[in-house]
Length: 111
Length: 111
Image 1 (cartoon, each protein chain N blue to C red):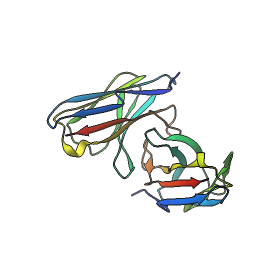
Image 2 (tube, helix red, strand yellow):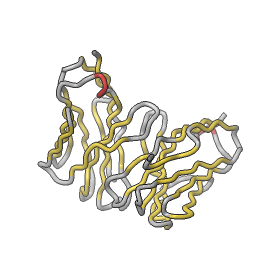
Image 3 (cartoon, chains in turn green, brown):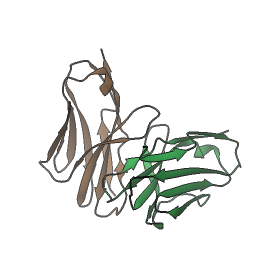
Image 4 (tube, chains in turn cyan, brown):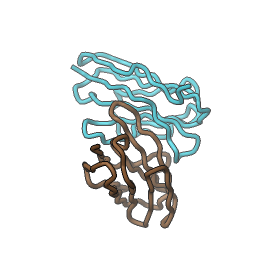
C-alpha cells in the first residue's frame, strides 16, 4: 500500500565503503527525485529522473550515482563514503513537477 | 537565485493557542508554493500547493495563504498532534523540475 518506499531505513557503515539505497514508487509517476536532508533539516535536491532519463543533476560529488532501471525505481549508489555524507536521504516522486510525494527516508551514518 | 526563508525557527504553543508560520520567498516566476509537514523520523507529507497571490487553502485546523512575497500557514486552535516541522518550498520558472525548500519551522503544541 506504501506509495513511495525506500530501503534500508537505516544504514551504518565505515568511511571508504560503497553503499546503495533503493527507492520504489507505486503511484505511476513519471518523475523521481533524490533529496538530502542535513542535521538542520534542510532539504536539498540531488537528482531527478523523468521516465528513466536524468533531468536534474545538482552539484553533487561524482561519488554519488543514481540509476533508474524503470520509471518506478530510482536507486542511489554512493562510492567511497565520507563522514560528510552522513544525512537522511529521501526519495520522492511526482506526476507533474509540483506535488511531490516523499518516501520515509534512509538515515545514513558514516563512521 | 531562488530563496526561501521560514520563521520562526521554532514555535511553542499551548493547546488552543492560534498562531501563524511565515515563509518568505524570492523566486523568478513563481509557479507554485508548497507546504509540507514532517514528523520526526518520517518523510515530508504534502499539505498544500498555492499558485497565485491571494489564493488560500484549508485543511482541518490549517490554512495557507499566499502573497507576492510570502506565505503564511495559520494554525487555529492547535492540538498536540499538530506538533511537527512544517516545511515551505517553491518552484520557479528558472528552476525547472526542482523544489527549493526553506529550513522549516518546528512547532510544539503543549496540552
